[in-house]
Length: 272
Image (cartoon, rainbow, N blue to C red; front, side, top):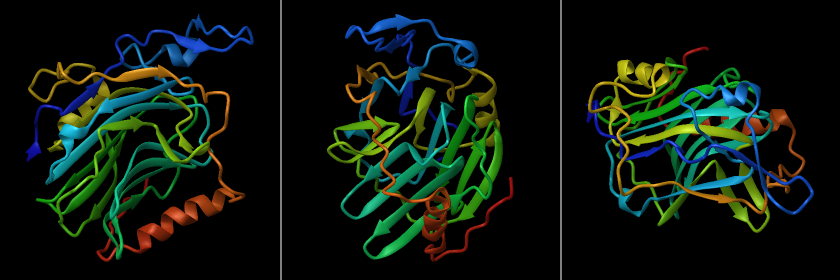
């Protein structure tokens, strides 16, 4: 479906109004938000440095002809790989992430190695300490994958037109992917207004999501009553989960570019 649909998921973090910090007294306390963080586009938000955001995702397990994922992010740094949504199955993988400020949007088979779509921004498009609106989209009807930043299309690529069979588990974590105990990737900063739509939203609706917190149509931020974010204080917030194993910054971006080159269909990338 193209243009407009009700979101499958909306996480607005209405109850996440304070940061929890460890001030060396072994008692987490509320801390007032400061500066640019307080100027969140839609009010409340989640601090992924101290909170783990999960949602019940088992009901999303269906073949999809289109998907749109929308989120506001505010990163404390742009080092390494910082996942927004990373889902690994036995044979397929979906990656929506930020690597050194570059946005990556991939869906591929691991064996044999074959990508349905693979997009990587040519230049960094996410800066630290700044709220940025990012939308990733895939539409089989148009054989297109797209990425929008702050309401503007910055990437477009051809796909092989295959539907998505995402390996949703019972719960999905936003902004974090664990490889093993104590090793993984984590988004360093804040997120707000996280949406998943099972349709390809029109550019007009995407612009409205960037400009407004509520829009007057059935594409508006409708919050399903049976889907709530699970926010917990992470015991790992003082421990660095990101272990790049000595890889340089250029190697991180090179790795993502190599994945893009493995696509069997030609990708069309618009320069930022």
